Length: 286
Length: 157
Image (cartoon, rainbow over all chains, first blue to last red; front, top):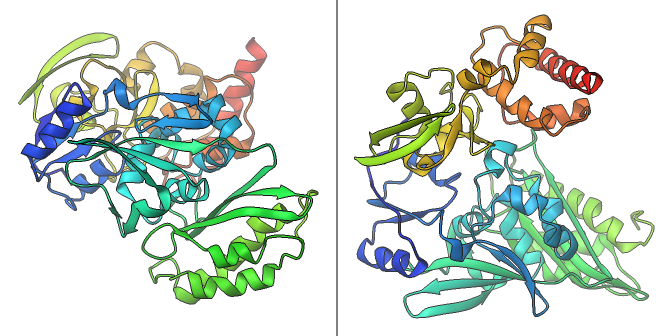
């Protein structure tokens, strides 16, 4: 189908874009547009205006500063894939990014767009939960910061106010003993996952610590499972206890791809595949 | 209507477009370049693949106004320059097309992989083309054609 009619605005600064959002309550921001245009063409969305922030230099760039990796909201997936700073300091993102859609979509789609869209099946929201990232959000009264764990509120829902713009994310630099894992189950490469898991933690002489397990495509939003993670910490980790905890912490949904029971079973499969190798230096599942 | 100026297949183009017009409708309806096809029109099938500023994109997921100031290359331009003549011949030789609807997008996506040089594995070829649907060939012949072209280009160096 064709998109419904809308007006098109292209501000030249973040301040101007925020002012336009204030003037046009039915407007939507467009950056890469890789989810938005599909939803417009399917007439799932009917904004009065599209405010194109895709060229704003303030929202670009990848930099390492003061012990954090700052990734501008307009960083495209293809850039995330290629950036040496991300490969070095946030290898989980590098591992995840080639699972995001297809090459011709990764050239346009942005990290900020994916996070603000908060699709429960998207990879990047779960990644920033696992990375314990902080979101930098610009609004009419300046910038505010929010932990990834507080940002996602539900199905396509975030704490972004209608006149706020996600400007960047900050990721703590991966420690020397950091370990990560990422896997998703899909019918075909590039499809939305049936279930997916992003994990990051630290591995020392006494086993794992600071492990974060972040799930996607299971329930209404990207979700951390701290109890399952806790069962894998220290000198006596137990995949069985972790797998059991998932039933309490995840709220699988039913859809055409898988029902609730299948999703939980597949989550346990992924837990073993992703967390198992993190438990032992040799990479063999415990 | 919004005024846009861009380059299409090396030629400057200026036009007035509705904001909701996506790039493929603009190419097909305004410029008569019908090589980019509209299959699903929501970013799944890849038949609308074109190059924008040197990178492959879904033409149905880019607005014409977003391409303002950019450089667009379509299958018509890439055919005229001879950039993919060998790949096109390999598609013919291997019967890598039947109805041909997916072929322009398939060629442009394959060239995006091949331009990085080397001979990609068949797995990498399949992965790179995974966003382009073909309902005729079963893909095997397409992978053959892309692999053949990669080997020919490698040997020619």
